[in-house]
Amino acid sequence: MPKHPAVFLDRDGTIIEDNEYISNTSDVTFFPYTFKVLKLLQKHFLLFVITNQSGISKGLTTESDVQKVNKYITEILKAKGITIFDTFYCPHKNEDNCICKKPKPHFINKAAQLYNVDLTKSFIIGDHPSDVECGINAGVTPIYILSGHGNKHKDELGFNSKICNNLSDASKFIMSTI
Ligand SMILES: [Mg+2]
Ligand SMILES: [Zn+2]
Image 1 (tube, rainbow, N blue to C red):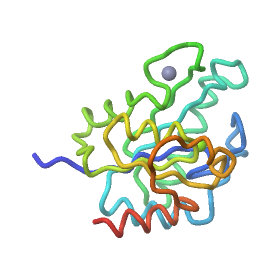
Image 2: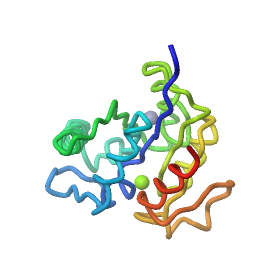
Image 3: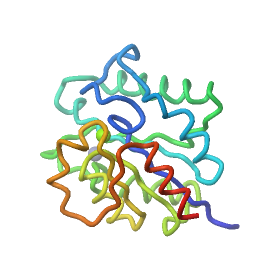
């Protein structure tokens, strides 16, 4: 069975505005280009969301609120004809030393196993250096974007990465490679 290329999407600052620790669906704001971009990408790639939600471990939000928000995002996208194959969230903070917080490649590897993903033909898009590092750790091509917190953390990017303004520009880069 042939393996599928995938795009692993960060959530906050990448497909929706980074409104800090989101507990309510009313705080979810999609970027204006998100729907169009994901519709295009899903013609060629399986789409996944991988998100660090340390607000759970810090007591700033709850696991059920994060699940509710994630479900809402998936349902809005579904209504627009976009399929997110799976959403993975890490509820931990750094001090928890978990196995799943980006930059650890745990969730990418899990998706690869569950959905037969070809990592060598896959990408990760995110607005934090840990997204880039996660991609490198997993063997997928990282794209750092300047939306969300991207501009703020740009100088901390200690890895070679393609840099794009936002998800829209990142998708143009991806499409130019296939
Ligand atoms: Mg982010
Ligand atoms: Zn974790």
